Image (tube, rainbow, N blue to C red; front, side, top):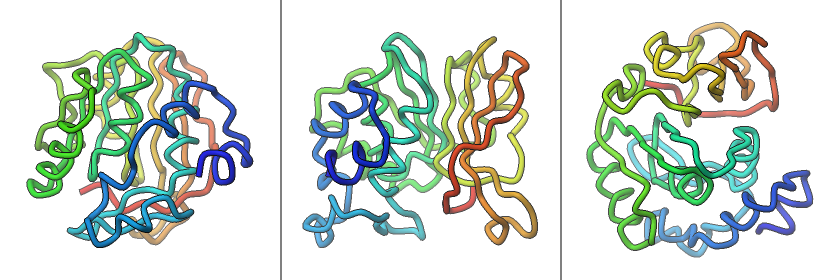
Length: 200
């Protein structure tokens, strides 16, 4: 998976590649899909949600340019897989998931791994996690047509926010681009066309 799907497509950060190689992706999918966990596409995890394609997970992780000391918030933790990857790359990771049963599954999967720096809770992702702010980086694993103001407020000075930005039309029907927004005034950078479920 790492060599053929990720490194061959241009993800070269050695820390990201090591994190992807070390984590058992099959623990983050439903048992009946475990044999397909390392395939080159997203998989359903219930409640209309998916675990993202391995390449997209790695691309997003690399785009955040984490050095190992940062505090990161993930919105839409779903299976917990992205949070686990971030947990091997950052100092602290916090994750928000709206669906209680998905949250429980993610917490169970994370509990089996040595990632004490990752903590998830149920919550409305658009509101963030104010008592844990500020965050050096915020990642949305769900699409929206604008940056939620509360998340921008919780981003540290010079922090980075990465999200699938929907370009128009009813949410989920426009063209999505993975977009990096930096709080240093450099504006928005469009990185990659993507398809994510919408932020709810």
